[in-house]
Image (cartoon, rainbow over the protein chains, first blue to last red):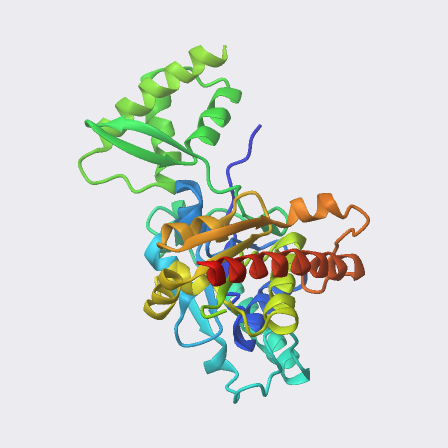
Length: 240
Length: 136
């Protein structure tokens, strides 16, 4: 059975190539992804928010995200918020490990102090990962869900670069509008392989899964159910 | 060369070719053509940084991408820059199949040599841009 993307923490580093702080963000992020929290984290290249598709831009709505910036310009934090959703946490290297020009080496080659900063930033990221995974997260709104257990999804999998993989989306016509519904292709696959028939009861059940990844505006639930039922029936007919 | 050519690597974080793109950009801007080039961080372009926007508007850019998504070329173009050349690391690798890159945080010897080969190609393109400027 296909698996819906499960809960991890998204890491977005600025990777700023001009300053040592940018290199520190990149290496610290890699250390968390590869060594400290490989099962719990995933990353995406910041430019993909602009160059990629809707699935890529959904990244921070899907995952609680930590933005890691080298300087006070906060390109990762601001870019993530601008194109996807507000990060749950913003870390700035120049604030966490203040240092004068070139004290940490150059952007191309960090020195020992720079590598120490990498470790410190990586530890800080890992702490936030643990904290975020210990709290519920509303994926549809990209923010803490308080105590709502429906918003919690368990973590699995391996460390992943999300470049180009994005979050699968499908466009539905709902109430006369074109709406991109996150994760719908996977949800359809999952329901069909569970032998769920294209009937009203299935649409009612499906909307609860869809709600985990999408914000359904107040008063539109019936319209969504109708659109989901119609599209799922068509999907089942196509793959039969 | 009156205006520096802008070298824009993709900023890729999770793949070896992204690291080759970045290292190649450093070799060009620091070792091979420091006077004729300027490294531009893609994150600043993504954000629409005002100074970077002005720089983009007045110069030719060489985008170096680590994967087919071509973030560097697409973002520079979408922010109003002129992409004089768009280089894919994979294409450079196809011309140098003996240089097998590995590693992300730290490139292996093959990766470093591939970055050098990439930088040599980019330097040639920088020279071409300079020659065009001179003849214009």
